[in-house]
Length: 187
Image (tube, helix red, strand yellow):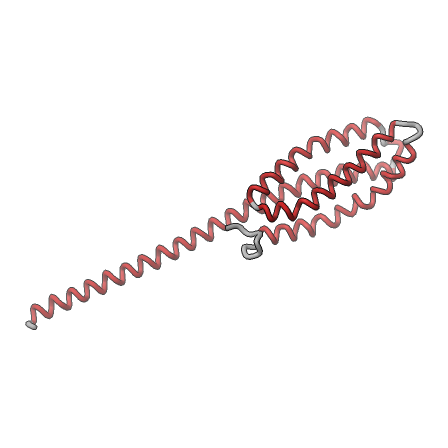
């Protein structure tokens, strides 16, 4: 091989090596960018899931507050527990329920596992409100008021206990919303 042929062969080998190096570097950069974008997308989806779960809890806490306020009056100011107050309670609860149901539906569309985890909690709220509703109907009757007040007083502590139990349940739910390997995370 002559010197010019050797130079051409060396240049060809060098060019080929540079091309391979550029392809490898480009492939690595593309893979890293894809991973970065995937991580950003998961973070955005995770934050959206957390925001939606927080919306559900916001409505649950609104219901808990209404129930606690009404039962507090049964214990502490039973004379103030009149048709105006019960109508206000029912109106407030009626206003929150569609918002809660809507928030749960959106959460289910985002992550069915997280939704299913929250269903028992929402069911507890519904059951307590149902019990309150059954008892406030008896407040207007002379014969039924005393019994209804007694039952509302009994509900005061379980309703108040929600104030203590809901935040840790919310924290656990948010941890599940953050997890990507437990079946609660996003794809």
